Amino acid sequence: MQKIGFLGLGKMGAVMALRFIEAGFPLTVWNRSADKTEPLAAAGANVAATPAAVTDEADIVISMLRDDAAAEQVFFGHDGLLSTKAGGRLFIEMSTLRPVTARALAARCADSSAAFIDAPVSGTVGPAKEGKLMALVGGSAADLQRAQPALEVLTRRIVHAGPVGQGAMLKLALNLALAVYWQSLAEAAALGRAGGLELATILDAMADSGAAARVLPAKIPLILEGSDYAAFDVATMEKDAKSILETGIEFGVPMPTTSAALASYASAHAAGLGEADAVSIVRFLSDKFESRAKE
Ligand code: NAP
Image (cartoon, rainbow, N blue to C red; front, side, top):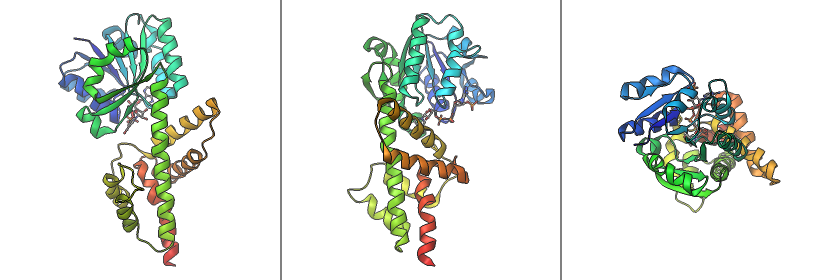
């Protein structure tokens, strides 16, 4: 059985890594904040002191990190994944990164005679726990075939988008639509509430109309009542919107609605909602118009 290494035990990584234990794979984990390795160690994982020690231990090394800077640090840093002999390993990078970063990581892996695929995911913590993510893969068919048994532990579907970087590109395209969807709903709510409609009435009718995204009905209670827990928060959507716009600049694609959405996520973050669910911009942008309608 392939020996798996897993780096990045945040909200997503913690539950993804656990699935390898449950599926019987030998697992070595590493996380920057060591305390997050404890539940995995209790479940039977080996804990590595450095990313390099994960490379030493594993055949397949999976990373699920915050952002591009984190991935560069973990791959290229002191005691990083590529600071030791990495030849023959397969690296599966599952964080949401810019395509240019995925290609840079792949090039340095190739320099070390190691293979690399980018495999960011669609789906949040619930689907991750159940192994029902969708992986969006960039890489060669041969490397994907090698990654398949590990990816199948985590996913309900694997989409081979093209060569390295194309998984990242597809993931950004998906998140663009989502980021803009919540922005459009926030504007619709602002208009309706300014005219005296209740937010609950707007969302209820919207969810049963052609204007509903599939994700909307399940998110209505979260929009109306908020929650102390957010699987996918405002700060993460802001990060992704920045990556989308930077990638748009690289490819010469103007994206005015993504720019508007980024402004909303950044304002919500600055107002203290960085850790709130990304859908909270619907209330954040529309609340002030309801009070204006009542004046
Ligand atoms: P998270 O809870 O914030 O976890 C981030 C992980 O990255 C933690 O393990 C953190 O370590 C680590 N990290 C951050 N900066 C680092 C650095 N400089 N060096 C080393 N490690 C670093 O994030 P998440 O929600 O699990 O998301 C992980 C990735 O998946 C992100 O790229 C996100 O965009 C993407 N994603 C998330 C969701 C979701 O629903 N949450 C869905 C799809 C995709 P510490 O524990 O030390 O902070």
